[in-house]
Length: 305
Image 1 (cartoon, rainbow, N blue to C red):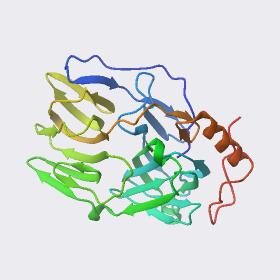
Image 2 (image 1 turned 90 degrees about the vertical axis):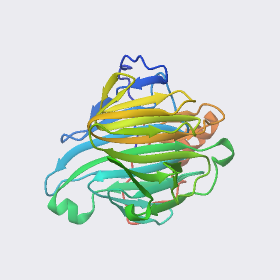
Image 3 (image 1 turned 45 degrees about the vertical axis):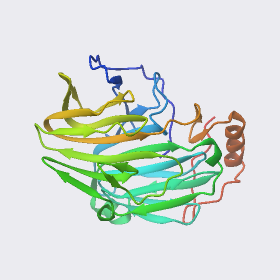
Image 4 (image 1 turned 30 degrees about the vertical axis):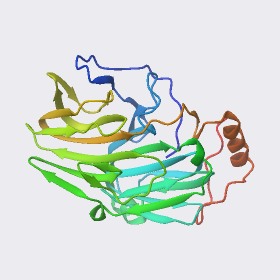
C-alpha cells in the first residue's frame, strides 16, 4: 500500500512489566467509506522492531457491491512488503509481471530491492458481490548490503505454511522460525512473523530467541505480569527472558521481530533507504517514469509534492 506521513500525536499505555519496553496505541486514519487504517510503526519513540519499519492494520470494513479498494500503481525501494489478510481478497500486480490474488492466511512477500511498482485492487468478483476486508500491511527494511537486490515476489498459500496447534491456541508461521517450526519463505535477514489465535484463559509463550520482538494485538485481550492490554496494541519487549502472555478472552495476535539492522533508515513516502541520496534518486525516477510499468495498469499515483 501507499503511505502518507501523519502528524498524529504519540500515544501509549502505562506499563509495569519490566520486560515491556514500549506499548503503542496505533494511530487511526479514516481513508473514506468507513475504511480505517491503524498505524503502529513507524512511531515517534520507535522506528523499527527488528527490520519491521511499517505496520498498518486496515479494516474491518464492509464494501457494498460495486465498491472496493483501488490502490493505483506506486513505487518502492529498499524494503519488502508483506500483505496478510484475515478477511477479503486483494489482486496484486507488479512491474515484474507478477499477478496474484491475495487471500486470507497466505504469505505474500514482495521484495522491492532496487525498485518495483505495484497496484492493489479488489478482484472483479468481490467488487461485484461486495466483501468484508480485514488485514495487515508490513514493510521489512532490507539490510544495507541488500538494499539494491533485484525485485522479486513470493506467494505461499495458507495451507503451505506450517501451523502449530497447542492446548488452546494455534499458530501459523508466516515467516522465519517460531514455535519450533520454520516457514518456507526465503529472507535476506533473520526475522519472524506468526499469527496466533487463542481461546480465553490460555498461556502462550514468546520465545527469547530473537534479538527484537513484539506482539501486535489485532483483537481480544491479554494479561502480562498482572497488567491487561486490549487490541489493537503493539507491545514491544526487551531482549532476554521468555515471555508468557495469558489471554483473558479469545484473542488474535501477531508475533513479530528479528535481528536489528545495522542502523536507522530514512523513510519518505514509499521509499526506505540507508541513504538520503538514494531516496532523492528514487523520487526523480518515479517522477520521470524510469520505473518499469505495471502490466494491465494505465494509472499511477503521482509523486507527492
